[in-house]
Image (cartoon, rainbow, N blue to C red; front, side):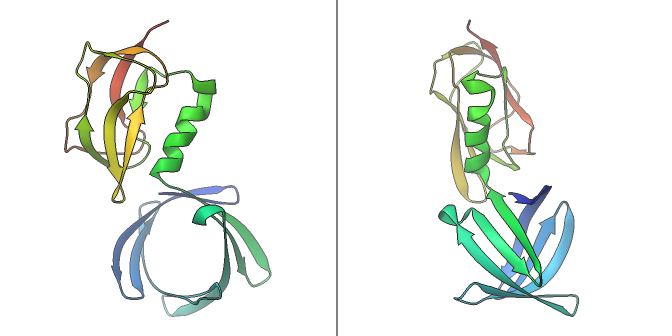
Length: 169
């Protein structure tokens, strides 16, 4: 998932969780941390023998947070696969791009169209899975599938081209 902390954007992935001990990857760098969240929003984190205490305040369905650490305060936005997809649909005022790309690292679950087939506004081209959540990648305009660049079961990177389209004018 993508995490926005103020102006900084980081790619975050949970690698392993065993009780309070977690292994995460932040921008391809791995961290082993011990995290305890209290019911009142206080978070205690231990990393390399150092303790960090924070207050974590949740907003908007758990995707926006205010994190207070010492005298500093940070706005944190969690951008998961669904949010990335919704943002990509809103860009360019609803115009369909000629390439469908992966919103984040994940796996191709199902491809619903073959090259040469016509797709209309709202059709699901690909079912995509990331972090155990499936998303339907749809078109926002009429088009023809020109080329399929992946197969069902393929693992894909964030931003990887999946399908090329010819946009009907």
